[in-house]
Image (cartoon, rainbow, N blue to C red; front, side, top):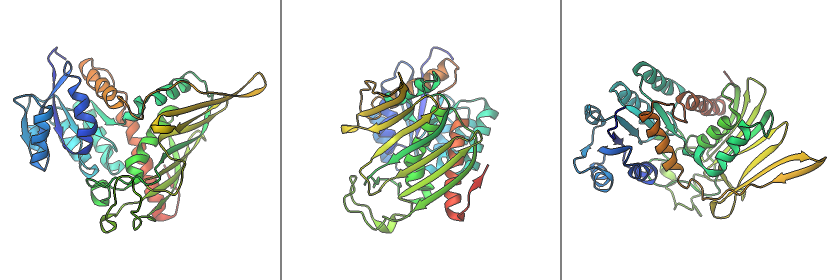
Length: 359
């Protein structure tokens, strides 16, 4: 790459663009600048340009027009899930590097098209799993890589809210999102767990999906939802067996009658020790390692500060842009995100058929 700043185009100027991507990119002006904004609701793109764009930034309502701008190097795809695959493929084919927000796609066939397009074009593709940069996630990852836990043969992936259904945008619309809690927050917990274990070879998946609380909007921390437009699952659970025998239990819910609330967390159990990522007060990480030393049970609690996701979006964006500038691999590889998509799809399929899905 030349020393010039990367030119970035934003496709989708809604919630995740405003919460994570655009504020992070705005802090990385030495690496890139936002020169184009696209949204089907033009006012959102206009607002995004005013807040984050260069003076000459363009506004579009059709992403294909944005892709025709040869000066754009990078595109962030921040739309509802249904559109992730074909916009990403079109952007790659147009010669752009692509950051696509999670989940990768609504099914594995669409995700495969994205990987094929990246290989065909030689452009970089990554998926927005920013929780890998959380402080507690980084500690657990390093412990796993240094063999602190030994052989990890059992894990739990946690993405459980008590009453935290997102009531804005199209989160509760199955047609546009492909699913509910599982594809929205379960995907983060599963990504982390596979990454910690460095195990991406599933053998079979059994899943249960529930639509139990759509008519009970009382007490939701994000406001009441309309049961008439709530067409996705409120919770889902999966048992994943890997080729090497390791087993993962995935639990996720937007709404579950529990006080054990954990989101984007893992519990890992190995031959040398274990670790549990818990949710402390005010979203502070609560991390506990356990092992045996001096013939006694021992627990260790590292000092892990920082609210959930603090600066994780910024670290994600920095590493992504630097991977383009320096021609290195992004931390989140599309092949890893593809396996996450495969497993999520298998949980939905198993729940529908009542049978295990074999890989």
